[in-house]
Length: 323
Image (cartoon, rainbow, N blue to C red; front, side):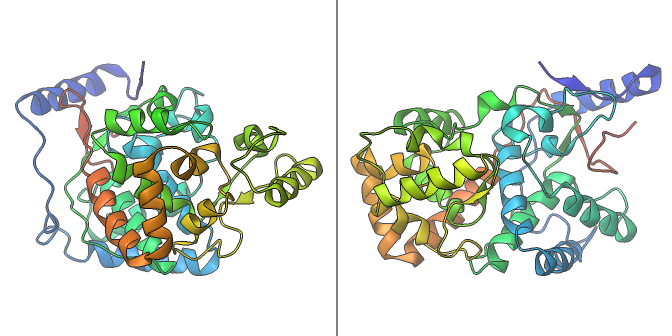
């Protein structure tokens, strides 16, 4: 079930034209040089806005990265998570898993700058892909070449929760979700390393980990500390990595070795399954190995495209479809 924006004869006519154009063939392949002629300064504009916003508020970096992940896992990287209908609570960003998403205003700022320089050219989906790369680099992580040419969906997918991995998921459940998106064990383990920055926004995301009295996969001191914080305020955000929360490094994996993963889905990578545990150990001891695999998996995830039947466009405003 999805929410379609637009009403009236003109909108329906436009929708039919777009559907027809998409139905003629597969989506074009993404390329690094997509905007070389139409908007050669696009990536510099994205980076400039990101630098201003992250310098003023570092938490925007993990927020943007999370936006990209949630967008790509709901029917491909199509900017659908950015859509908002003020007259409805049926948007993708309104589903439970997306209610704590942040950074929409940053993407809107970037889009405004790009529309001023290159009107109706750079898609919101591409903006999110570039901004996510820059967010990682600005916090000390790796950088990579972003493939471009995505188009923006006219749909907001209000069943997005079913496409996302659960914070309480165990290894086999997590892997099934990733495999459904064409991603594998290495992608799951490497992309989970994004939790080296950012935070869980509510204790309900990890209550299952600290409530088990006989749990063997959590450090007792860590569990007691989390329980104390939640007793004070169960809506208080908690960093995934309390040692270097705003530095993109391999500390996340070191925490897993010490049974200090915040979410069940974090610790599951090391507690269960030899292939994941082996990768966690490698990444914990070799940051460059983590960075290399993370870059590869980000490009792979960024290549997830919407179904061919889905109508797409280049939005003029990221929060609403064109009319």
